[in-house]
Image 1: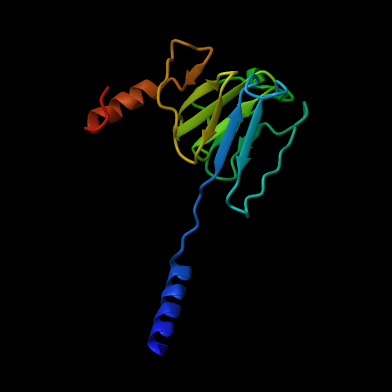
Image 2: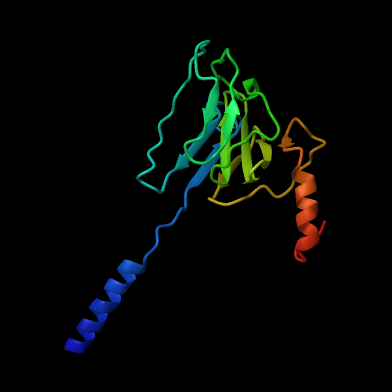
Length: 177
């Protein structure tokens, strides 16, 4: 019995010390016709307790910094002299090739619409508009499966996306294009 208790204790300690943290964050987005009050909804849980999220509204300014440098990587870009207050998704200006790698996905929302964007790597990205009458539960992985880039009201992508996917598919036997 003593050997059994010792073995169970050793196994328990081994399991405790070999456990690895998981990044199993989940996002939920609801279009305005999928909610009872007509509002858009974006919710996300953060499974890494040390990464508390703080939300900011940056007001318009004309004397702010002229360069943005990411704290997470070597990304650096010039900023306009007059910075505008960001208020909704369409107010943002799309600048191809100027995106920062974050995790896999980012949600953007205002009172009228929600966009979900996935960053493949570096400057390669795709975004899809969440239909007003739909909701989505997005796990911590890539989920955008189909893009209709002719439908610019509902889909967007970096200018290099198709070229990169075609180049990759030629090297991968499991991906047919």
